[in-house]
Image (cartoon, rainbow, N blue to C red; front, side):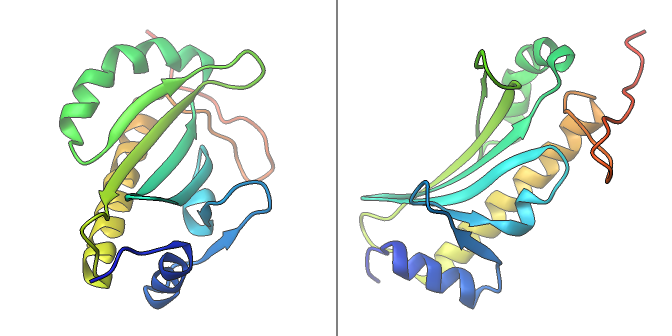
Length: 153
C-alpha cells in the first residue's frame, strides 16, 4: 500500500467507474453524477498530504436554515461517518457542507478507497434525501423554477 497522490486517486475513480472532472479553479476531482443531484452545488474529492476529503455542498433554502441548524446535532449522530456544518455568506445562498475524511498517511489500497467513497456517497445521499423530505433544501425543477415547499403549519 502506498500513500495515494492526485493522479492515483483519479486512476482509482476511473477504475471504480465514477465520472469525474478536474476544474481549472481548484485541485479537486469533481464528482459529476453527485453534482447533478437535486440541491447539490458542488461535490468533489480533495487529495491532501495525509488524507482524502470528500466534500459535498448542498443549497439550503433560507427559511430552512434555522430548522436545519437546530437539527444538526441529531443529523450528526444519525450519520456518524459524515461531518456536517452550515455555511452562510452574504453573497450566496446558505449551504449545508457534508464532509468525510479518509486518512492516508499509512497507505491506502484501492479496496479501502472504494469502501470509503461508496460509504461516504451512500450516507450523503441518504442525508440529502432526509433533508429534502424535511424541506430544508432549495429545490428547482428541470426548467430552473423553484419548486413549492410544504406549508410550515
